[in-house]
Length: 382
Image (cartoon, rainbow, N blue to C red; front, side):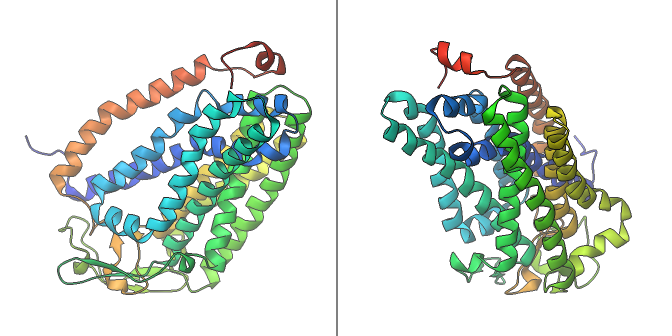
């Protein structure tokens, strides 16, 4: 059967799908991470902490599906990107996974004993499981924007020359802090919809207020770094979007400020950074006006805008190299074969709508606020 889409179109479709999956992860599991990050600070008694925990208790596990789908999409659509990034960021990924492992243990074991010290320890484990992944994911995106130290030899074998501490620079730390502030604001937006009005929600909104201001300032600072810092890459010559997947066939060079070129060439892309600023501002307005839906919608728009800005700024690059810019991986030169992308798309067209429908059904069934009375009387609550 002939493939109805050419190679270039399939590559572009999968680049868009990867963005959708990453945004889906940030929108769903992002508020889980944000709630866990503020848990020890907004809830002061055991009952208050149970109230916060049970706002995400029924959905956090399912929300991680988006993280798995994103990793699977990179593995299948851009195997070179998967191999190099997951190997180079190995220690960082190990740190993230270690922190994420604390989440299910924290949820399941926290209420096994009534001892306050026991429960407090697991509350801080949940905090770690929220804060560390948010920070490391942001630092990782900052490193991708700055470029990472790898090279390819003539046989396409990858060599990485960098350590864990090399991942932390002023720019990548800004990206990490932006990620944390973004998910804390999103967590506050979720709590605005999911827990009863009272002192816990008031504290959550105060943290959301600080996180919203920080998001705007850090996003602006990151934008300034991209505009005036030594960050950016461009192709050395014309690309062949339908050509063979061989990174060494497409040259690239470092070009400070080049990450802003796409916005000049395609002004519609400015929608993304505009949302990155407007979304948190709307969330702040929602907090000021006591609009619970406004807080969540604003934080969601901010997540979409900030993540989209990173992807649109870099296009067509996915993983640029500072060690050998000619080894940089792009949407066009590092993908799987034409047939592989087509088969994967067929599977996605069947399975992704099912995931979306099931997710929508779950949230519809679980719609409503968690109250202190619910926590007191229900034996099924954490």
